[in-house]
Structures are given as structure tokens and as C-alpha cells.
Image (cartoon, rainbow, N blue to C red; front, top):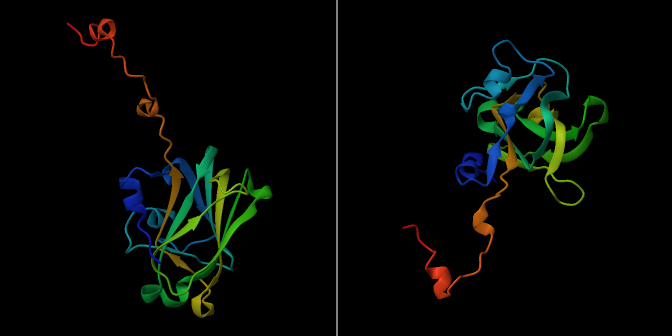
Length: 179
């Protein structure tokens, strides 16, 4: 099932918070790093260059609420470079990361949404998100990910939700407009 993270952003339900983070990779081929992973072009990609698991580390300066991580993968283009099994971990620093979600991908073609929820079924609050590529299709060694987006829920704090009583007396009505 393919999702459209940009549609959810346009509708105002979530916001992309990846730009607020510091990104690092366990390895990459020259010219295929964080810049390509975050450039919003589906034709470019990150390519790992080392032993598995391949890691993407996303560190926030302050504790951040994360609802979804979106990955763009394309089996038709990348074949054995396409991730098959992914672990998403979170914590306050690298030494206390715990696994939030493990996802199996079967020949993905498009955006894959990974929900990140705590024990109370709420979006997680964390300083670090780590995406670990545990295995690839066809037992491939290195991996390609074309894009990653990190979504935080939008909290509506508007005053429209506050219900004011209707003031209908003659005395109140006389003050209802500016003269």
C-alpha cells in the first residue's frame, strides 16, 4: 500500500520536522548521502557502503513528537538494493535506543508509512530516531533509499473550538458592533 506524505502535509494534519534534525548515516558512497536522501527528488537516493545493518540517525535538539516516518523505496529500479526488513528505534541518546517498530517490505514501489507509537498508542516523543536496514531483497549487501520524511502531528490550539454563549438581550445587542 502506497501513501502520499505530501498530501497529509498539504491538508495540515502533519508537518515535516526532518529539517529540524541533524542527520547522519552509517556509511554512504560519495555523492549518495544525506543530501540526496533529503533533496525531495525521487530520482536521487542514499546508497550505503559498508556492512549491515545500514543506519540512518535523525537527532533532534529538543524532544520531538513523531507520528510517522515515511520511506520511499522502489524495487523496480533498485532490485537487490531495496530494503526488505527495517527496524525503527528511538531514545534520548544512542545508548538507550529501543525498538519501536519492525517492518517487512515486499517489493515496495512508493512511499511506505511506518507509524511510531508508544505503549499508550500515542505518537512517540524522542530525541533520536534511528532507521536500521536489517536486510535487502535478493540478499543484497548495500541499500538504496530514495527519500525519508519525518512527520509530527499538528496540534490545533485555535480559539474557534471555544464555545461562547449567545448574547441576545437588548442591552448586549447594543454593544455588539463598533460604531
